[in-house]
Amino acid sequence: MNALQEMKENKTYEEWIQSLDLERGRGSPQGGSRSSEADWLHALRRKAYERFKTLGFPNRKSEAWKYLHLEPLLKTSFALPARQTELSAEKIQEIKKSFLASNENRLVFVNGRCRQDLSAAHLPEGSKLQNLGEALKNGDPILTAYLGRGIENETNAFTALNASNFQEGVYLSLAKDARVENPIELIFVAADSGSPLVFYPRIFVFLETGAQAEVVTHYLDLTRNVYFMNAAAEIYLGKNTKLRWTNVHLEGSGANSFLNTQCHLQEKSVFERAAFFHGGALTRDEVNVDFEAENASCALSGLAALSGNSQVFHHATVRHRAGHCTSRQVYKNILAGRAQAEFNSLVHVLRDAPQSNSEQLDKNLLLSDSARAYSRPQLRIDNDDVQCNHGATTGQLAKDELFYLQSRGLDKNLARQVLIFSFAQEVLDKILFLPLRRRLEQWAQATIQGMIKNGKANAYDPRP
Picture 1 (tube, rainbow, N blue to C red):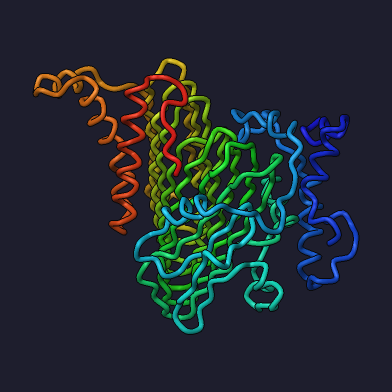
Picture 2 (picture 1 turned 30 degrees about the horizontal axis):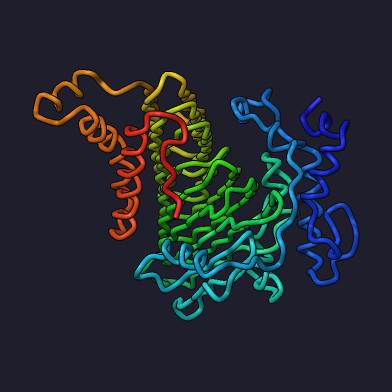
């Protein structure tokens, strides 16, 4: 019996399904009319919901969900957000603090709803940055051809739920040879609400041949309430394209965030992704990369600095379907209190992918006896002509290194701060846009100082 069947036996399951349905009065995946939507989109939602019912909620018998406790999430009855969340002037200023100074392209979402008054778009001719809900109404042919592609084979039940229930999100398409100099910023804000909320942001990105861009995604928590953000991103990179992607998660103790990113790479395309995590009750970050043509490359990295009872789960699957492709993974976790982190990664080199090159590395720094790290880098190789390696380390600060720094005049706390920041620096250095890197370095320094100074759970909260 899976978790879905178990939940069906009590009222909690029914409450959860009700909260997962589409907006009242617009029909639902289980049936009903959706006259405002195109037939293909309605069919996609139905296929997604049928896939969810087939998969059911995952349980801990599955290797991919072994260390993740879903029970508190499934026992919470969530509500859909209102069409517009009222924000005070102070809250709006807090959101604006996250804006990058040189940013010219931005979409802001509050409780899953797009705020046009805080958004802007100035892309090259032929390119688009707009609310996905509006793009769907306009019948964009790219969306018709690619959105939700392969949903009938989805293996993540929560991603299927997103495809079934999303209403708004991001639509970014770049025309052939388009270059966007400054980062495109996507901001998802959780704001105060009278009850626990669930929302389903969906991000769709399509780069035509030769296009290049950088995207920075912020997940901001301006509420102390419990919420569940179930997000999904689809990325399609054409020939000779390059996309840098940075996720920044600064969330509170009531935040439950699931994000599934799927990236498809064509010939000579490049995908670089870095993710940063602090706070949150439960965060699951899943990345799936498919090399669909030769000479493409991807680099995945992550840095989590967690205390209290925060949990983050890094999951990555990279499929080398074509030859001469390169993949790199570097994930690091700094854990204090009762924090937990998991790194679960699979690199699959298929038979028709000669001269594939892959590296996986996971490092964990434990600052307390009760912190836990689980590491599982995996290789599946069906071709002999490859270069693949993986590794993982978990430990505490080295006493000889601490002693060396103290012998040079640093007090113990400053010596610890230097060593911990050095541990994080490798991931921070992957951010090439200097204003963003400086901001993240300041975040890392402040977080590390707070963890050392307080030395206990919930030591430091860096949210605006």
